[in-house]
Amino acid sequence: MAFDLTSIETALAKVQSGQSYRVDGFFYTRADLKTLFDIRRELKAESAAENKTMFSLASFDSVS
Image (cartoon, rainbow, N blue to C red; front, side):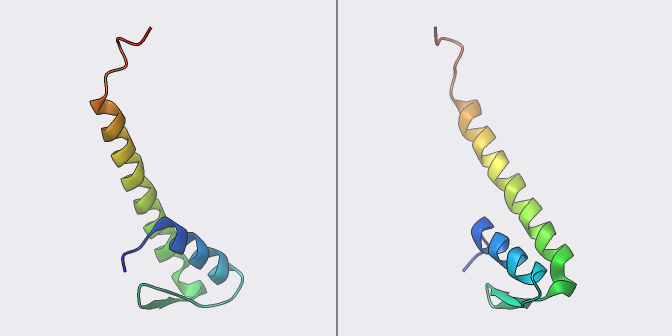
């Protein structure tokens, strides 16, 4: 299982409330908040890059 934004968001919510949480075989605790925030930032950046590429391939110049 690879990291996905939904599982990271869930992990962040659980960890911030004081619980540990398992994602992709790893347990995260409050000490791992920076790691989870970094993973979330990377996933969002990847998603934005994919969306930009998808839309940049389409030409909207001829739409009236």
